[in-house]
Amino acid sequence: MIEQSSISYYQLLDDIEREACRDSFYEFLQSFWDVIIKETPVFNWHIKFLCDELQELSKSIVRREAKPYDLIVNIPPGTTKSTVTTIMWPAWLWTQDPTIRIITNSYSMDLSIEHAVKSRDILTSEKFKRLFPEVKIRKDKGAKSSYENTNTGARYTTSTGGTITGKHAHILISDDPLNPSQAASDADRKAANEHTKTLSSRKVDKANTPVITIMQRLHEEDVTGYLLKKKGEKIRHLNLPAEDSEKVLPAEVRAKYISGLLDPVRLNRSVLDEALTDLGSMGYAGQYDQSPTAKGGNIVKATWFKYMSSASFQSIRTPQNPVVFFMDTAYTDKDQDNDPTGIIATCKIGADLYITKAAKVYKEFPELIKFVPDWVRANGYSNQSTLRIEPKASGLSVVQQLKRTTDINITTTPTPKDDKKTRLTASSPKIECGRVILITDTWNEDFVDEICGFPNKTHDEYVDLIAYAVDYHLNTPKTQSHAIHNAFR
Image (cartoon, rainbow, N blue to C red; front, side):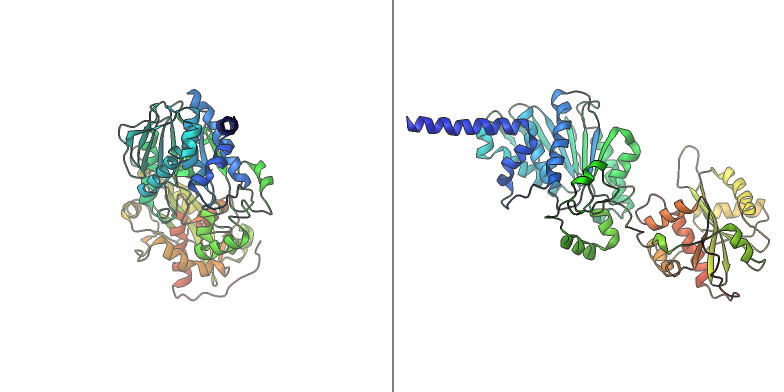
């Protein structure tokens, strides 16, 4: 009699736990945490927040209804993001509907398999089998990288650049499609974005299958940037930097930050200070601050630029201070869009470089040839001026055509020996000491934003141009009268 009561008691406990786990993904995560993680758990508020977000999205998946949105989560490393999203959640989804098919992705196949194996460890644990006996892994399809259950549900894994031919899923999870070391590579970023397109073709139903992307924010054109630009309002964006700031999304969760920190245990002040030392300000910005640009700027800081009004500049400029123009050319051939053409107007007075105007335009070759003479003449061109054009293929074509059709003084800039990062770094001391002065105008914000955001910005035409201008005006031995440091705004 006692033995029967004991069995009934433990059965009752299992029944209670089973229902709690089915009703709440967060309860499930807590219940199965020790199956794959032996350390004492720390359930910071953001873990429940992520669980609740994923559970809400799960409703449409289970009902096979139109998805409300795709989801992007930007969050620092070391916050259990993979445990929550890529390991625990797929296992919990099968407690809701064991027919669900899932594809998970990461930047490497080894990492994708590791996540899948840990999920399988949960599914094959004694506890899971006891609470959810209806979910069983098929013995003939139970590999590490891909497995199926006896109810037609499946978990498939792939990696950036890999293939997953013939497989379709009710949900796609992309966990770190790009790692920090790849973010600086144009080729690697493009590969990650192209792979994201490929993943989107692996949906059972395009209207119903959501894509969940969880990663650090590493570049303006990383997968997050690509998706936000492409889908915009169709995406729910959760942005959870390590430290409280205006970048937190949704804004209301800022109130949950503890002493200004996302997770004061895993990411306490000491841990973050060490990360800043190890990664530098730019690396820290992407991985912990969830911003492609470090506070104030990456290589160049926004506060280094000085400003002067146009009227003040004109009052100190003389005919002995000609305007020199620099142009980084690009033009559109037929229907193929390339980078914009960048052009700046500059002037050296004393030991200082003044940038008086900057612009970017998208124009086909004939329109570009018509545009250039009008622009330089409108912005201070004189017979003492020169237009100096970067000597790449499109630039040489522009030089040749402008020489044939205009009387503008045109030449090429020296062929660069170093890459853009090296050249901007070499120019940065001149900017830092206040010798690069911007004439106040509407172009200032875009100009400074691009230069300070480099190398994590979409475009870098102004980076090339300021490097050329600094080298020409401030590094070339030339004697000028005297520096004028007054009239700054």
